[in-house]
Length: 403
Image (cartoon, rainbow, N blue to C red; front, side, top):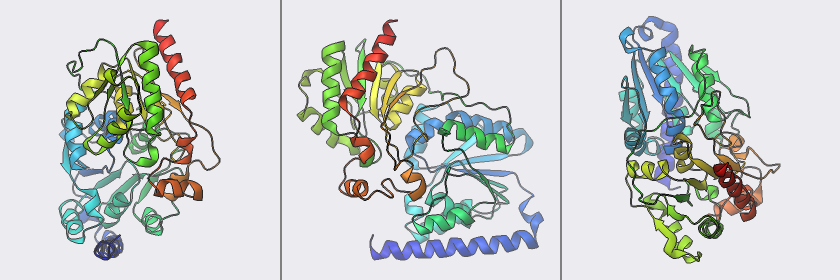
């Protein structure tokens, strides 16, 4: 981290901390000044997969805080997530989506001040449906009357800045159990806010026209938001050859522009190159969704593509680590409809599970794992997953399709 960013972060942290103290004082001195409006701000720092998982919850916020009663709900998201959500998800019309660059927010003091000045003042209710450093700093600096957060199942201990702001940011906290998948966690937050009958269920996508002409095909997503989550690429190539040769399906690769390197590595280690169609870095959000919606089976890392598969009711296999055990995989819901299909999760047990929950970064507490991650390799819990274990789950799913 360069000196300029460090200086900016220091100013941001200091500013947010003293705003928190000042706002506490103002709420005591003039409490009525903060209770006269019905502005609800949802600060959502998640990426594409997180956006899919929260989709069903959003409609419930409009029921809790209806527009006809004077409530104004704004959802702050990253700019790319904003475009993704509007392209792919069924969204309630009574929530306004607006974009914030959360990375710049914690690295640039001028931008931090502009965001807080625009969104942090005169709010009745701030909702944080997940933990992140940018969210904790935003909440600390905000003068909202109520600040309700969906926290982690365990308190973060490292880094120290995250630990401090996690403790001072909110007025109310909802803490899930370790075994609660994110869909269940959103349900707990909504029930805490008053929607006591809400039940967690699979998200819903906008229905798309078929994009791939193949009648039967497999989607493989070899990338993810972080390298530590990515199963070694040559193993994905083995899986692709296995599916091609045993089940006679073409393989369609999905991924963003920043994942093109996976395509080159994948193609260099596969036998049946003529059966591979790569869409990595070539599709819109809408086309990506359409590719997944008509696939016979989807295989990938813990990534948005697997969440798209779940929301599309497609058969899917997720190769997942233990750093956020149960947070996103395996999928858990309260209501399972007849057409619903939950992704199959392949993972191996290790004593260092939940490392990122405690230490904010994957590999916390395991020096060997942290060394791998620093070298841009997958986490140890990902590396221990064998090709055969994934093949076994594919066979089970394909056999289930026949029955």
